[in-house]
View 1 (cartoon, rainbow, N blue to C red):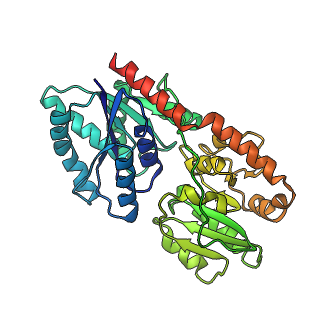
View 2 (view 1 turned 180 degrees about the vertical axis):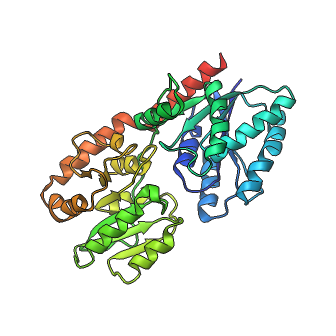
Amino acid sequence: MKSKVFHIITHFDMGGAERVAINIAKSKSVNFEYHLFEIVRANSEFSDKFIEECKANNIHYHRSNISSKKLAILFFPITFLLKCFKIRPNIIHTHTEIPDLSVFLFSKLAGLFMLKHKYVRTIHNTQLWNEWGKIGAIVEPFFIKKNSNVAISTSTKHSYKEQNKVEKLPIIFNGVEKSIQKIFPDIKNNKINILFAGRLEYQKGVAELISVINALKNDNRFHFHIIGEGSLEVTLLNATESLKHVSKYDKIFNLSQYLESFDYLFMPSNFEGLGLMCVEANMNRLLCIINNCLGLKETLPNDWLLKVENNSIEAYLNIFNEKIQNIDKEKMIDQASKFANENFSLTQMQEKYEALYIQKLK
């Protein structure tokens, strides 16, 4: 009989945690049946594609009916309890932080009915509960007591251990698969095409992105393609609206299929849990220019030439103006691809999580 694993994610939309959950659930193991649960209803083209991917891989999916974040968190325990009575999960796997809070509230309700569950909780970020510090102080002891935590990187592990004084914390690196490549329709011929893709938030280094773009505004070699949305979107648009070497796009489903079209991925992140976008780039032969920060430094070899310390604008400009002219590009692509395949394979991630599930169920 198959063990039933429930993955709890914020929404069926673009995000690193969502991608990890569906990648685990795509496992072909005959021993597990996977269900994906959405807490906050998403309504976008990406949501439709996400559901199509679930169907194509025989993954059971359960949609939310509530688009308000706070209401969805409050009502989730009730609707999820009914699903648990009906389907009887063996493992409940939650993916940071809205799912964590929702599952924590569910556990209190389930306790009233004498229901006990096994939990796995993936820690996706080096910094947790930035906006909900007091809530985090209540929720974290629950997952620590359940011995449920799994880190996605050495950086995530060290940060969590420092903040919560835990002794043991396993690491399972996120896995990525190489995509069949297509030509990005808006690529600029005879230009060096630079890709920035991610949430437009402080975490992703939007201020540094703007500084570099403006510093290179009179350099007609480059074109920057910016893909993403977020609270700093207006700031970005105001800073770049008159610039001809910048194109801005909203979310693009399955962006990984276009990565080889670009010349460089630019990731000036201030911190990451694990830079999954960088791993995807490595898998698909796109060179990365990165800030050597927590959660990004692990995605590339230690001697990587295209990295800077402390998000230095001067160092980035040195890369754009000097280093990329002098590197052996194909050699570096092969180096990054080899590193990614050795450390971040999809099969390896699936097998390690399933071994953890089996251990939990003993």
